[in-house]
Image (cartoon, rainbow, N blue to C red; front, side, top):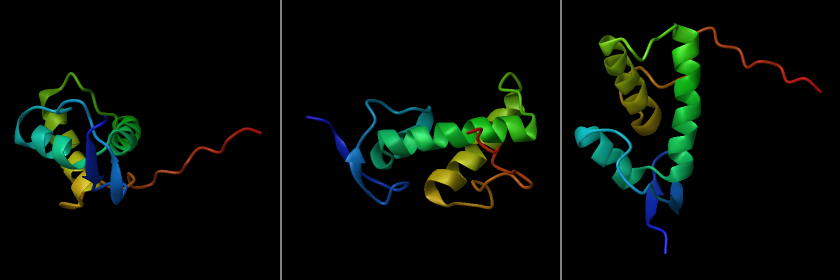
Length: 94
């Protein structure tokens, strides 16, 4: 049986992650309160954040920026976590 969590992203009970997806206390907190679907939503947002802000995951300073966005998106903490300023959803071709 799948491990269930009360997901802070989805605002409902959903299937949890198999292991903490990030190191340390933040990773454990995510493991305990973010579902698989909620984590996937974060990964989709992370891609947008990296692309829109021209971040490089090879840069050690980027991890701090990503964690601020992660805390904002997942837990509503701080000023980060929203859609990057000036972002416009690409139009889909029909």
